[in-house]
Image (cartoon, rainbow, N blue to C red; front, side):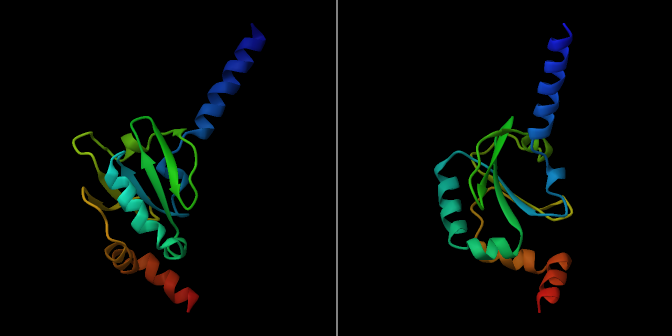
Length: 139
């Protein structure tokens, strides 16, 4: 019985450790959370992948969210993990595509239901005070 209890506790703690949430990225990365499994997702990724260096400079990670799981799509694709992102972002299956920009502070900065042009994304991020500070530090 003790072995079963220890095993159960280890399993539960492992599940908690591997669950993705916004808090693990706060102050480290900006996130683009995409809810879609449609053709629009492929189009969006195609546009993003042409700007990989610019994404890295802006500390951007692209994540695909589903109701109970998520996976990183950029910079490198990961496997699906248990996740609370869908609930945290208050996503609803009202549309086949939604994209959300989350700032370094963990707050939603942009939310739309159409493809996001990289120029618009970069201009928007580059106008943010934290990004302005990053740019000044690198110059």
